[in-house]
Image (cartoon, rainbow, N blue to C red; front, side):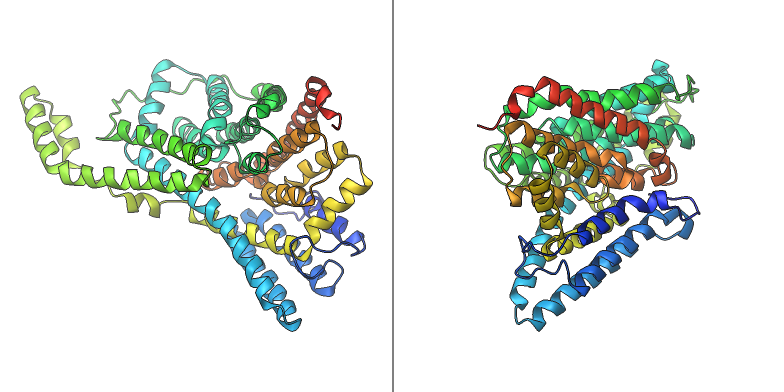
Length: 488
């Protein structure tokens, strides 16, 4: 989410357009989640201005050398402080408190889910999984173009099961290991991974939080999500084909060194898969939030880390005897540098700036929604616009504003839409975030993981191509699922 130094209107336009659109309509609609309609008040206009200013500072991160979490954290505090002041003045402090706690709960589930995913990624990295994968790819002689398609294809295939965020983090870790130092190629691959992961997550209830919300609301059945497979694949392939022509057909040189994973590496990968399976089972079988399964999976990793620490002296002695018999002096030197595995060290290495940025964004948008802006926007769109154009526009909005509150606003409004239109908003909210690096959890997380290589501007220059994929996916959905647009 870095920007070049000039403060251009092109970079401010999406956020400003959203704010002006909200302010242009009269405050005739009561806030759906709040007791007071503050959309036409001075306080409401001030909060929108604060939110826009915070996002401008986020986009200027590279120029200002200020982490992206700082402006949104302050903005969230000011917005909710103003809300609290208004509600206390009107003798309704409990309403604001309840809304804040509900928004905080929404963030907490997302943050804990992300924290566990980051911890597993860091644990696999520490155990040498990605180094070994990099060595395997180099030994196989994959060119940069092959790596581009391999990581993008895997992101599209894995994200429906492991969710788009976790998948993007995993593929990004592979790319940064294989193409270390080649910032242009890493940026291009990360753009492709974000698009692929978001597209793959759009046709599965487990691929994104918004698809989970639609599924839990009973608007789309589990098997009906797969009607979006064709449109999602189109959304990924159109920009990927274009971008692939800009990938150099370069073969990275092999280092010629033997890369050996540390003890427990394969078992940590299996534990990660088990964690994902536990999260899926919690939702499908127990109807509990998937974050429960993820946090349980963190417990798996902690128990395994305890086992690795307790058994380390015995294992070292066994391997030392083995290598002495073989006369492998290099292996003996490697054993001398082995340190015990510590889960909490892996947690500490998580990208906390990304997590705090999520907090700021969710709380800011939650505050604006509580004041009535998101509900007003949905009301105007579905009452005055055709549902198709409204859903397409909301997909574009999700590139600036997080798709979770956008989808929540639509679900709260409960517009009278056909099954095809509910699938359309599921598609557009899922893939619309690919237009900007800050438009999806996958993009934000990758900016933290590939800091300095994958940036806001680096993604922005490919946005026109990504937009072509966005339009193409919508047209494919309107063609393939034309029969589902009739109201029953």
